[in-house]
Image 1 (cartoon, helix red, strand yellow):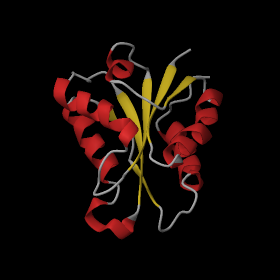
Image 2 (cartoon, helix red, strand yellow):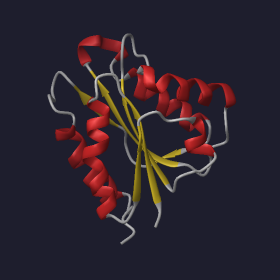
Image 3 (cartoon, one colour):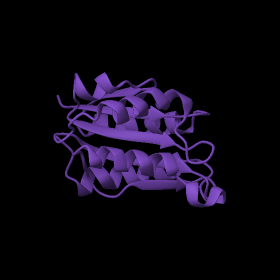
Amino acid sequence: MPELKIFVGTMYGGALDVAEQVAPLFETAGYEVNVLEQPSLGDLTEAPPDLALFCVSTTGSGDFPGNFVPFARELDEKSPALTDLRYGLIALGDSSYGETFCGAGRRLDEMLQGLGATRLGERLEVDAMETFMADDAALPWAEAWIEEQRLAVL
């Protein structure tokens, strides 16, 4: 059974909630799903998943949440080749912060692509000013992502 790892960067639990809400969709599509609340670079490089999904909220001025900082720092410092990585990205933010809206998700996306990873489809950006419950946007996106990218293995 192929593995999907969901890498979570969250401050107040919103991104974790999204990860837990979309996980059953991938299980139904034939994946073993692991939600990683304290991800490490080894989760990506030492035991690479068949597919990765990043659910990352933005804090402060476009910063990564505290639990995600060690992962992002290690990714930046070690610059591993990620040419075999296929991933999706759900970025959570608040447009009232202007230019830093979804800054952590956008920066992570650039980092991953810079290391050779392939994003499948478009990044989802969830605006807290428009969507109170992020999973209201994430669930339909994940369903469409699975279908459009032909990710189902069952």
